[in-house]
Image (cartoon, rainbow, N blue to C red; front, side, top):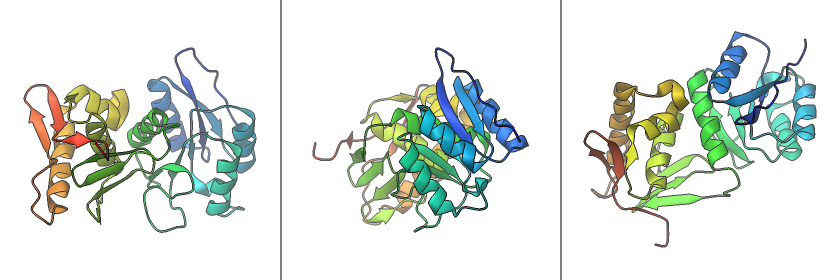
Length: 241
C-alpha cells in the first residue's frame, strides 16, 4: 500500500500521521488540512520511521497499533529517538495510565478520539513545543502544559483532552480574559468556532471538576464568566510569583 505525502504550504506546518490506511485516517488528514496543517501519511511502521528521520515535522500523530510486529512501547521509543517533534498518540500505551507518559509523549487520546480532538491536541502540542516541562499555576491548581496533566493540591484532575486544553488556555492567560473564540480554537481548532453551547457545556463540567477537587473548601482559582466576551481564571500565576 502506498504512503502519500503532502507538499508544505507557506503558512502550514507539516504533521506526520502514522496510522493504518482507512476512512478515519482520511478524516484526520482532512481535519488537519482544514487548519492549514499539512499531513504526510505513513501507512506502515517502516514508512513512519523513514519519514520521521528524514524530515522536520511540527508534530507526529501515531496509532501504536500501526505495526503489529512491534510492541507499542518499542515503536514509540524508536519514534522519539528519530524525531524531536511532539508526539500525539491515539490508543493504549503500556505504562501507569496517565494521559501523557514521561517518554516524551505530548498527548494521549483514546483510539476512538474524534478528528477535532486530534487536531486540537496537535495544535496545543505545537504551541508548547520547545518549552520543556512548562508549568503554570493558580493557587493550588497546577497545569503541566507539556505532559498534559492537571493537579489541584495532591489530587490529579480527571480531565478529558478537551477540558485540559480549555483549562490550559485559561491558566496560560494568567488571569487575563480569554475570549470564547480563543477557547473554541484551543479546544477544537476552527471546526469548533462559534459553537458557544458546546464550549459552555465543557466550562460547566470543568467548574464541577475543579470544585470537587477542592476538598479544603478553597474558593480560589475559579473559572469566571466575562459576560458577552469569554472567561478568565482568578489569580492565575506562575509558580514562585
